[in-house]
Image (spheres, rainbow, N blue to C red):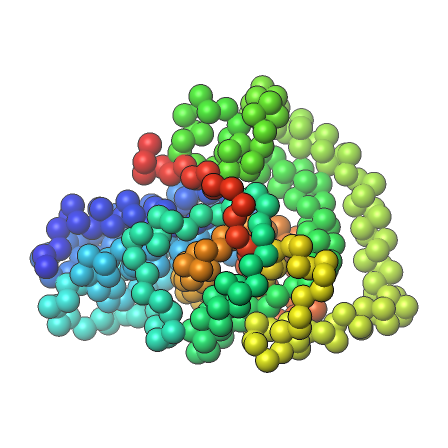
Length: 384
């Protein structure tokens, strides 16, 4: 095996299938050195592909970059190339990641290994086909108990070492938090305007086939997409966002009143009952409660968590992104798709309540189930 620039660039193309918030694809990889036995790759962030309002802590950015790194490592392994080291520095817009790739015959010793994922023997061996097959499905998902239980057991075993966990949230609680998180996403003028800039309604728009969230992926009917395309003009985004924020203001006031009640003595007593279920929500066969009749009509709702601590480093969040991709690939292997709901952790209030409910820090939120219909393929810059 000989490393060449063409080979490494082909790995970049495969890695571009990695998931990212709003399908922004924020990574900018380049080859800084390439020899027959080893290559150095640097990955920076495109400042035009950030979400400063929706992702002010850059958490989603770091997870996305971790998914890209893991995709690169999977593609490289299939090509007979080892990912020898991964070094992460900076934070947010200044983050840069160095990846050293080496041939199997290379004996070079890595000197700087800030972050590497735990290679649990329970993780399946993934390949390029898995990366291409994985998709986010924003349509209706069917609950698939047996397949989910098998996939969850694989993930739980593989994550026995890393300090991450998966917690399943009951459907009723999930839907309540999701409604309130949506108030934040659509009621905050800056966040909503930023989201609008990444929505793609018109198939004739060149951006429709490059990035963002397309009408097809969002399962928006054709007539509605045409109407939205007519209004989808940058000059109108601020006006539309302002109108939406004003319209949601009464709901936000009601939500604030509910939060105040929750902090009262009576509200605290009422909250104690569901909180007592926290220990039974972990994804273990021994403790997971049976689904209610209502829950059996809905997909599983999961939170990827980490222990509460003062601050996760950028390297920590990049590594968690790598683990997150492995979870999604494992679910995909079992015929399951995910629907990502980052708004649950991006809303400061809902994030705080989730953390109190599960006694840990939520870092990713998504529903899991079997797709009912074929899933539209999300666009990629590299394929344009």
